[in-house]
Length: 432
Image 1 (tube, rainbow, N blue to C red):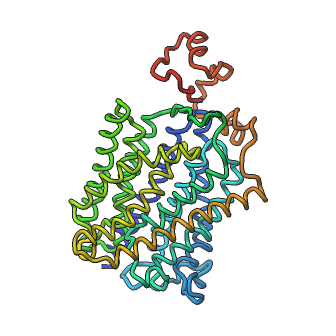
Image 2 (image 1 turned 60 degrees about the vertical axis):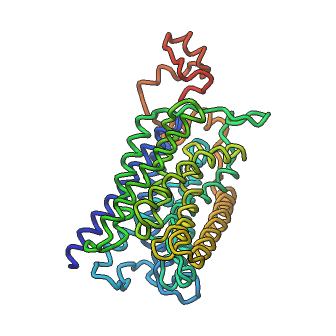
Image 3 (image 1 turned 45 degrees about the vertical axis):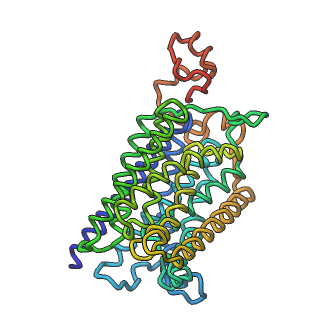
């Protein structure tokens, strides 16, 4: 059985790590053209610097023996020495957990896009992978963690990964400030047109594909009888979240909004991640549907706070990560409030959600200050105006657009100068 489990977990880990390609395409499609290379490079930081830092330090803090009551104190530099209670090589387990750590970093990437110093992002990736994510992950997923001991249920990480990353992103985006021109003096918001919706869509498809491994791989057991149920719940919640977001935008805005539909799908996937192994298929549909509503109004709420989140990471991962955590206490097949009338699990889930929110906000604030005091946090006005692709990496995302580099960003002037019609984007800034 150990051989089958090894193949299962290694393949699942590969799919989870492949989700970084989805993050890269999603963010590159949602940001302006002049910053597409930069968001891609940040994902490479997650997969390189972040992965190594987690292997050396973060894994030990998360899964090491708990000698102090809230933090792991063993396995530093030797994660392969972990003792597992399942038939699985330690290297396969560490690899799978590495994929989760890298995903948590990538959630923050989108919310701080287009105006964060690249050096500051490297510092952020190190802090998340070594301390921030492993510490709260220890509380939730280490059998000796205090939230695990009281019975918190988070099967694949709605709280441990998504909620934490989302609320950390909220704090960092607030301190970082909005992109230049994003909000007007009267409080109204300007829409910055995404550079490439088909590219963002491809990223969403990859993320959805990888999510099946994200959730089913968390069984760590190829013979687990719940694999099919977990996969089906994952599919249904994503489909439900996207369906509701699609219909609500058609009703509310008069258009079938592709960005919000994408984020509705991702929100359903985020929300079901905690309870995918514990709820029925109908519950998964309901959870996904609620998440599709939450993402729309959470996005508007974040905008009203004058917090600039170019990809909607806070609404998708933060708000729906917390909702998904609480939903376990409502829809758990055996111990949910709506299914059995029990309140105890709901109380535990509410406590766990609050802990993750507070820890995410605090760690986001602390990380921002560390960056400010060391390498600097925000780009200069000149770098932001030029675009981070050229400022930090010396290469544009699309070389064939160089002939437009000196043209005005106002769409009406752009049409007059080039003869290219961009009428569908009237009153929006040209991407790039």
